Length: 376
Ligand SMILES: *[C@@H]1O[C@H](CO)[C@@H](O)[C@H](O)[C@H]1NC(C)=O
Ligand SMILES: *[C@@H]1O[C@H](CO)[C@@H](O)[C@H](O)[C@H]1NC(C)=O
Image: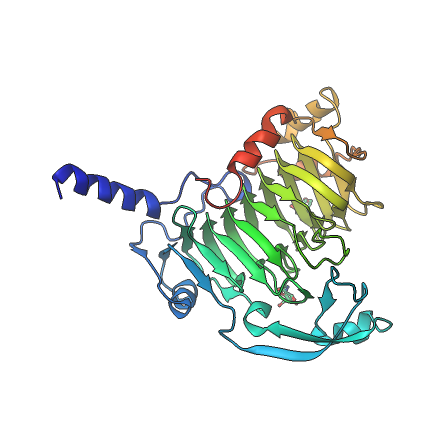
């Protein structure tokens, strides 16, 4: 090889293993595995080991890691809360859920892949990145839990986790953690939540440029639209949701509660057959510069938390005192109404790292072009 070719080859390798950009918003400053020498797992066992050990690591995925059948399957009695038509999700009887909550639902036999039901543990100080569009984790999700902090996950896809079954598994779980950045991740065909933040504090989290692909053959609403999108529960959680493409869902997109401050900015919601936001007690949501296209119900009633929908240029000047700038209005096309102007919680933004916002007018095209895996 000529020297210039060697240099070019090294440059390509270096480009593939480094994090692109930096987190904006609440998780600003997250470094993940930092400058650790990159490792390239070749088996599912190696991937699990790198993610869960106590070394700071940069882990690069260059292929699909398929966990399907790695832990066997289970056949058991579950239930059919939404009926047994072929497009409806069925439920695994996890923790007696069927007996406790769906006792009138018909019993059905369920057969699911065990690997999907519990994600891979991700320990502190990890960067997990995909090379180009080749980094895929199939059949198992990721769990950032039990005090884990300083984690970057960028440019991968997580797919095919028991999509037929509620309780079949979540793609990304964050619960009892701090400083987590999930960026340019695609999630598709998932049994339960695409992203879930549990009841423990998840600390500072930035979810940016992700593609929540809700197209499914098995839906809790029996219509090809996935119900279990993003669930942000917590206890003093700070979540920046920016530049995400939230497509073809029918509920929980997101559900927010439990003393969670959510800054939803410049996201694109497109084609939802139910509701986008569901805001429970303790959910504090500032939504600005987003686009809602073909969203019948941008927010479900009643709203038990608080919501500021950035209703007008004049009303949005209130943001200046807390965010240091005015808020951006949201854009709507063939969508239901979205108007609530709670301002009491805006003081929670004071002194925090706050994501920037652009006018909604360019959001739909830029999000479609940039969100998800393989777009860096
Ligand atoms: C979060 O952690 C709490 C306490 O361990 C647990 O009860 C809850 O089920 C967890 N949530 C998720 C989504 O893992
Ligand atoms: C919001 O501010 C109140 C009052 O300071 C505080 O009790 C609460 O924990 C804050 N919540 C979040 C999610 O930051």
